[in-house]
Length: 237
Image (cartoon, rainbow, N blue to C red; front, side, top):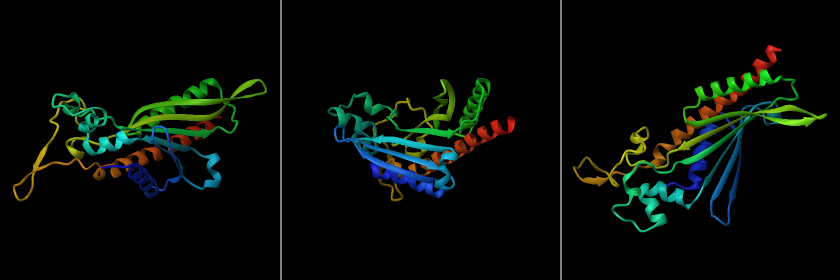
């Protein structure tokens, strides 16, 4: 079984191991009982964080996530209704993943940039970020603007990414790249060294630390792509 503390711990350990500086925050929604996590990550000195790129990682963990991590598809049934043998929840790999929202930002520091250059920068950033993001399912670059002297000026280069983390699979780590919509039995079995037939447990805690390492590696690559985009603009002027 996974908990909110497990997931935040996996992420922070992976981030620290790769040299990311982290600033985590934790909340509890007292109405929904969901736990919320947000962590700003960057490289280098904290005193210079406003001059370099940063990434904020955020996710929400609720009681359903804990149930899913323990029982997978069966947990959906037990969470919402009585378990019935013909329920479609028991015959699918499509267990809802944990969604991480990644928000990147890099201050442009008032640099005068034309619309054509901004478009070129965002296109290049999206290409480089997508190439180096193994776990990302969506990448959206953008530019935040500020009004100065009755004129809109680019303030921050931004990038939004969505990462889906598998918290359960009936085949364990060996099934993570299978077709998520392929029907599967509700239970699987394995034979131990003594020849006994036993339930095969997916044990997501065995693969999630490595998944979080891959997420943090992707973050490092995108942070570097952001800094490279701004360096490209500075050298092009």
